[in-house]
Length: 372
Length: 85
Ligand code: SF4
Image (cartoon, rainbow over all chains, first blue to last red; front, side, top):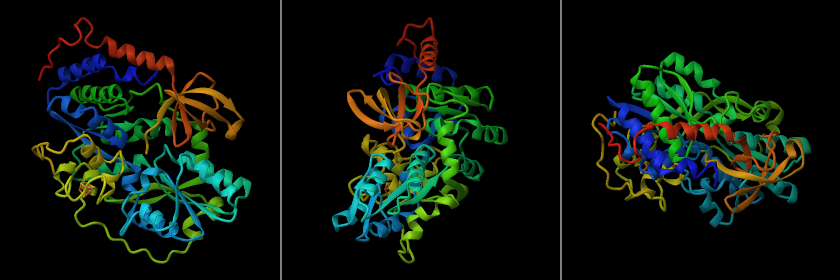
């Protein structure tokens, strides 16, 4: 298919790789922010084709992985209520809460349904006025506009049996938090292309200036990822720190104005806890005042939530690029995609799942200097 | 869940925030919302995420990027360049 096959071409990939090899004279650590890019890198073995001097650090950009445990537990409690139809994107179903997951709720008789689009949940609410339909609204800036439109339309149409459990997260504050961490080893960033399709590129310019760190807006096909790496390396080698767009077919500087307008209307910025990482100031979205009556958290009193994370799981360190999945003792043994202990093993875009799926089970454990 | 998939717009219905399209993803068709891409027309390629088109794919920009890749190492026979450490 056009725009897919061309960006998978092995001959062009070879040229890009050769150029990266030619350009690299020293070790560099580059973080790909988005889990979709992590998936592409591991799937195509891009990390193994690069010069040894280049280390790719997997970033926290998987919304399934970073949704806080408290929110998962709240979702489980709401979904267990008999009057509720709980609608979620498919990959949230197996994310472990403190005790079980949405799939368990479903097997115990809870009405949990997978939706393809948030508008499907709204349509369900309109079709079944006697049920309370709750949409689990998670995701980054790419997903938030879709959930925002469902909220806006429910509000405009006066739908009373529809509500949303909101736990959106924002990328730039996470990048800022990574840069501010004393253990930060990241020297350049591959930015999440689709987030930039919506939000534009402007939010990153101050970060590039302030931290003097190269950032390259990058797509998801193998050639896109290689081009992002190539541009990051060229900048690093020549001492430049600029914001570059290596995904111009999908990302315009101004982003998607229509989506941003609805986002700004329906949501407002709030502090958010990231699973495994902690609270990052101004890194989330919650419903803005006019839409609060659609807030599932307020509508359903589920009592106090007491969370308990698996003591074995080190996904917080994986998400911050401090360890690779192999370094977790449970990886591939007590923790697998069939029986995951942590969210990074559940989501297809989680680093642990990517390593497991593409059989990176027997890699040398750690590169020198890693694990800090 | 953040992956967006490119597809080609086959048919458009409705208007404004209610505008939808049938989109062809390499043989599989799905109805998606065009609420956020008012500029998209039949025949355009778009990236779809959770049932929403989020951006129109710019063909000229795609071709420019591919041309740039093809120019890399121009003069080398493809595949004969040994990576230098
Ligand atoms: S392998 Fe499993 S237990 Fe270990 S960090 Fe990954 S998700 Fe957590």
